[in-house]
Length: 107
Image: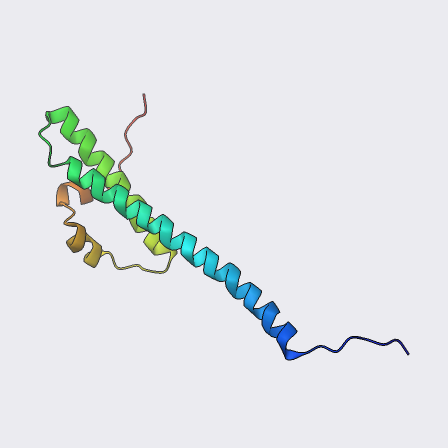
């Protein structure tokens, strides 16, 4: 009969913990990506406060809408479907919200 090394609880704990480490790293990266997306949205919204002509203003609005859409999609992928709080917190104007999903031609 072949001898086999005993399996102890510590080995099983280490194996379980290594999975947790990966999950922890994924959660950290997800949070970091959401933070970057939120900062990009805030920056795009701040750009709306600068004086701009009609065409420039429309470009700024579409850019902010694109950033808002990306932020909303990231939140939805995390299972957060209600965006009302974010709309209030970031003070996203209706002019931006109505442009979400509009794609400009990239000429």
